[in-house]
Amino acid sequence: MIIDLHIHGCYSRATSKNLDLKNLEKWAKVKGVDLLGTGDFTHPKWIEEIKNNLVEQPSGLLVSKTGFPFMLQTEVSLVYTKEGKGRRVHNLVLAPSLEVVNQITDWLLTKGRVDYDGRPIFKIPCPEFVEALRKISPEIEIIPAHIWTPWFSMFGSNSGFDSLKDCFQDQAKHIHAIETGISSDPAMNWRLKQLDNINIVSFSDLHSFWPWRLGREATILNTKKNYKDIINSLRTGQGLTGTIETSPSYGKYHFTGHRDCNICVDPKKSKELNFICPKCNKQMTRGVAERVEELADRPEGYIRPNAPEVYTLLPLHELIASIYGIKSFTSKKAFELYNNLISHFKSEYDILIHISEEELYKVAEPSLVKLIMQNRKGELKLKPGYDGVYGELILE
Image (cartoon, rainbow, N blue to C red; front, side):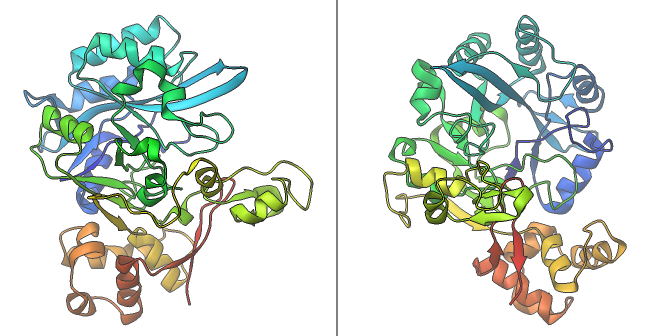
């Protein structure tokens, strides 16, 4: 079962107006995702969308009219000051029922508003947040989101902490998993001993329903499709068999840099520059790779014993656009090529992970098949992303 539990709806900032449950389900099936988060359950208009279009099940999940499953999920931004430093930490919240969702929202309303954004902001410290939600229900799961992003995360270089314990204090015992984010992968997180007993998951954090966003990162479980068993898997690691990642270089904050000056540097070079842009002398945005080096207490290349499998894949649209020189993923040409491939096989994941090279040659041009196989083997080269700029695939 492939799951993507970091979703946003059309009432979140910087999202598509057409980002509704119908389109999420449609493209999840095309991508090969078996279970989605609902996204944004604290927003009054979006929770009405959920209640009007999904039916709650005894399993703790909700299903659409066609039976596609969703798990109640939202993201909350906690912005506060601790030890004289501004902290901005995003957390995913998973809930077992609409009744519990109502209680979460009622509690948040005592702290502020929930109607202005699908991902609301509250001046609540992380420990207080976890403790309050667990009082509502111990079945609620909190997962620190995209934990290395410079501006809004647990380990963020500009707004975070140096350890999970510092961030969540006495509530750290209730944090069982962390989300890698686009700019890091499991191998980068294995380098921190403090995360040895924490499960590593990946989700898309999508702001549109298109298949180059939905499921671009996901988690693979071998467990029953109900809330209790899925949460148990995320908490214990039992049945958590793998994750699907983009290459960390693809992420918008992998390397240190300054977008306005087109400056992108690796961790070694950025230290030599003292994190100052060599063109304008302004502070550069410190990348995830550099932040990992700062906190890591193991060498690069360390492999966690018995770690789940990791699939490192770029979305199929990225491969198609690169091979054919297509500038827009949404162009007619890009979708003609994409839909032709999808029509022959089960899903995009099926093409990227499972279909044999011989079968692919029957329906796709050799250059594209070669790129799909390089993608599958982790042999693609990318120009690293930095300071809000996505990484780029380099064709040789």
